Image (cartoon, rainbow, N blue to C red):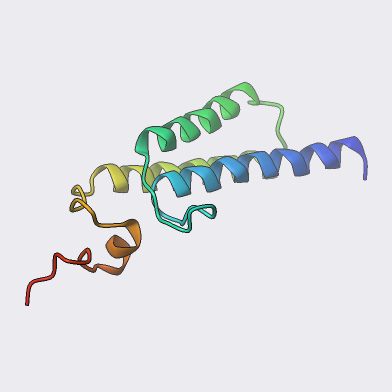
Length: 111
């Protein structure tokens, strides 16, 4: 494997690392360490901003495939971010998994 191939793989890994982090920070996927869905939109926005900065700083230096992948990742993240920002606040005590399942937090259900 030559240096260019290695750099392309590492660039893809970097972009996908920030993609996974932002999805986790938006509460779209579970935190693998806590096994809970957590939401931190400020951190998610920061992860998206880092990818936007990377796009600007690497303009003209990426292959067509790298540019397309970065553009698609940013589009997906921004659409998901807008979706999360526009969601009504979750009920206090309701976890992300309860939210995703459409359920009520334990102890709040009425009979």
